[in-house]
Length: 113
Length: 114
Image (tube, rainbow over the protein chains, first blue to last red):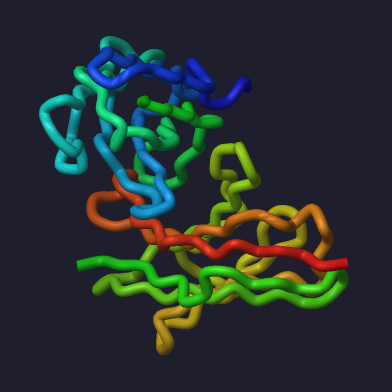
C-alpha cells in the first residue's frame, strides 16, 4: 500500500492567492482527516469526513478555508484568499471506522508571503 | 472535556540509556490511547496503541507503553535509545464516537546525545 498521498509537498504563494492542497487516502479507509501543525498551536484538527461526508468542521479557522471529498479516493483543502498566518504544515490522515487508528500523509508545507 | 498533557517539551537522553516520555490524559470513559512519532520533515507514524486488555502494550521500534488508570497516564518507554530515535513524540486519546477524532498532546522532542 502506498500510504496516504499528499500533494504538493511544498507550496510557496503570495498573500491573497488561492491555495489547494490534495490528499489521496489509503484505499478502504472510510475516515479522512485534515490537520494543521504550527509551532505555536501544535497539531490542530481542521475537519474530518466519514464516507465522503463532512462530519465536523468546527476546527476550520474561518470561511477562507473549505474542504471537499468528492469521492472515496480524493480530498482537497482550499484556502482562498491565503494569508501569511496560514503558513503551516497541513497533514491529511485516513482511518478505518471504529479503530481510531489514523495514518498520516507526509504533509504539505505551506508558506504564504 | 478530553485533553492530553505531555509535561516535557524537550528531553535529551544519551544513546544506550533508557527513555520514558510522560503522557497524562483527561477522559471520563475508558480511553483509546496512542503514541505517534514524527521525524523531521515527515508525517506522524503510529508507534503503538491501547484499546483494552493488557495494560502494557508493545509497539514498533522496541517501544512499549503502560496504561495506568489510577494515574490517568500512558507513558512511553524504551530500554535502550538509539540515535535514530531522535524525533518528536505525540500522545493522543481517541474521544467521542469510535473512529473519529484524536486529541493530541503538544509533543515531546527527544534529542539523543552520543
